[in-house]
Amino acid sequence: MGFSAGQEQWRARLGTLRQVVRQEVVSRQLAAHLPDLPPRRVLDIGCGQGTQALYLARRGHSVTGLDASDRLLDDFRASVAAEPAEVGARVRLVRGDAEQLADTFAPSSFDVVLCQGVLMYFPDPGPLLDAVGQVLAPGGMVSLLVRNGDALAMRPGLLADWDNVERAFEGQSYLNRIGVQARADRLEDLTAALARRGLSVRQWYGVRVFTDTAASDAALPDAATLDTVLRCEERAGRTDPYRRVAALLHLIAERR
Ligand SMILES: C[S@@+](CC[C@H](N)C(=O)[O-])C[C@H]1O[C@@H](n2cnc3c(N)ncnc32)[C@H](O)[C@@H]1O
Image (tube, rainbow, N blue to C red; front, side, top):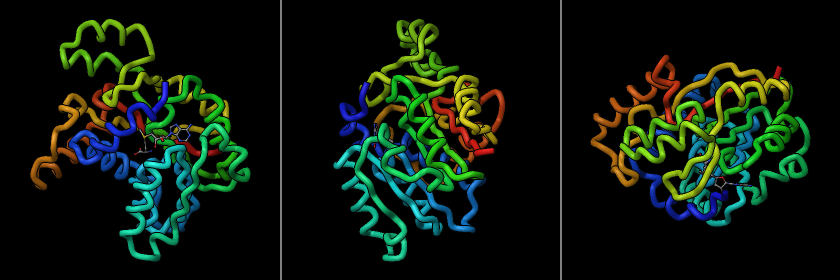
């Protein structure tokens, strides 16, 4: 189980419909909990190419991006270089292993911690959640994006991939679209795991309800259609029962 085997596929698909929907919907959901002021100290664990981190830096927050991949950090650096100098000055990139998080940063040193699309590559999410709890300041907020373990059979089912539907009903492991065996989280389990660390879920959303079964290389539609798709995805992501069968869960938790 490791992201690096799928890294080039991840990079190649960042501009596709599925990935743009994921990033845009997550960004809108996050913005509802994170106003531009006051500026916060944000840690993005497994920031990769830095899409969300850069959005937040543009909005005035100070962002530290931590990632194990030199290649993705180079991509992030290239995006930062194209920004106005004051945005670049708010971004710090750290190459490191998320497993060493608590040794890399001082306790309570961040107001906001993002960990999006990362937990599925950890066989046991516990140690990383412990470290998140340690680096988060009192009153701080966490944004977690995970594969939805309550609805793992949806994707293979809608794609008529029947062998994998049966497997998905039984387990919490799946082969993702970038060819990596990964792990899904159930909402109730993750909520309880966060509560044990003093973090209570303020809100949760689904991400990619309608577009999850689009082809991996599906391109963006015209701007007006994309706008409609994003509005529909965003609405489904906050509405029962749709959000419960989304491909991804986005949890917003806060430190009591
Ligand atoms: C699917 S990408 C998500 C990137 C970004 N968070 C996003 O949502 O667009 C997963 C990222 O986690 C990073 N990653 C995976 N395991 C890691 C680890 N143990 N330590 C640090 N980074 C890790 C990968 O290098 C990659 O950039």
